[in-house]
Length: 229
Image: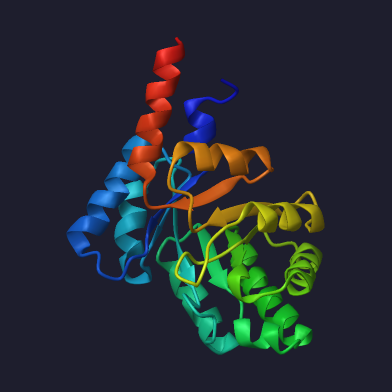
């Protein structure tokens, strides 16, 4: 097999964004991700301080969402969300673009929004992922977003929230990798539910995946690696 456990675990942003998760489930999810050494935990914003405390001193990053899940908040509100998240220990922030403005073709607005959020996050030495929500966009719009994000210098472009009408597709991931510069990484979200799906997107150049089935994926990874040794 052409992967290690670290290769796989290091791709997973463990998702704890379901609004019905209670505080005990959120804490347990953080501790599971810590034990399995995922790349990060992306948690409901209010629980980010707890998440950051649990992960303190580890390689697992604490992260949360901005403008989630629909992206329609005013830019000033998104900036306030980002500043609060950074204050609460956020190391990677996943922001949703203004989908309505994208569909309206208001690229100056989109460029300004992404630029201001990226500037705020990078000024604190942290990283930003920009969520497109591709299920609502055509290819021309996706390509333009990739170009803008590349020019601004975001850290990742991301397919979806996982709460829209559709998630990551192979076609979208290929498109985003093709039209993003090398310094911008690709994150898949929505529909990555098993190890085979994760390995397929990895082969396309995807470096992160949002997943809620993290334990199942990594247990299967351990099983396969153990079987070959």
